[in-house]
Length: 366
Ligand SMILES: C[S@@+](CC[C@H](N)C(=O)[O-])C[C@H]1O[C@@H](n2cnc3c(N)ncnc32)[C@H](O)[C@@H]1O
Image (cartoon, rainbow, N blue to C red):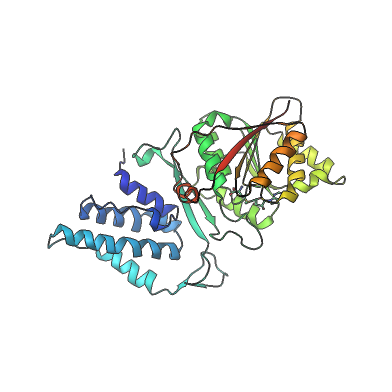
């Protein structure tokens, strides 16, 4: 068992998921030496973060928050021997503070200045099958992604993970039987967080036949990033034998020229038991096409099929338009009762603070 104090684990998870320091709590009740050791061994020298680091911008803001707290803690303990570990100062002053620019993680990208929008970054989410109370790190899974930290990049919203994905992932982690040995299709999968978690859940069930997962999106760069993320060697999803990413434009469902290949893709190739989608209702104009795709995928009569669509309620009128369109198309829609006050993902805590709600809708055929 590799246990860690819960308050330090929260900091570790916050650092890994680039949680803004204002949402972190410095554990001033712990001994300075314990905090020092944790920061050096588990954060600064952590092999995972050396390979998949948070952006320099984030690291800078994290250490800028930590250092004064740690200095104050050392002073108040009054132990003349105790001091902030020099490696922390070295990292901050030599690597982070002196780099006025934020080097890109990929060659070829122009360097950004400190005033630039947030740079793309690796982000690591800790999650635990069955719930989030254990402090034994060995019981936790991690999912790591390289993603944009801006809301829109290169004209797409798909290059970062959105709150609805975190909430739907939590729902599935708490109800893993929904994905075990199932054929799954994700619509508008973005950079692949939800899919990577689903693939891991399928493998964790330990069945020989884990199930299948097809992640789909309209944007080629998003699909490339999604594929890369799911295949990162640190992610369990990389060892799933049957995960793929494919181009799927919902508007094909309303185009007489495209509907036949789309129907064949949905009903013959993918043949999904469960269709997932997170934050895919944001433009009212796309609703008719999305609902048409859902109908095509769900109304294949050989066996019962279900869709779970998680929506961040930014504009209630848009959500209403979606729920009306689903019901008008003859599908059954119900809003799930989510008993998830305890947010499993640190970023969800941050996003949830903005009073934005996420609903999960279950959609089935009559
Ligand atoms: C707000 S992002 C959500 C991404 C991801 N599901 C998440 O929650 O993090 C919306 C996604 O829908 C995709 N999308 C937008 N229009 C689409 C269309 N017509 N067909 C398929 N995907 C589309 C975008 O490329 C983008 O990845």
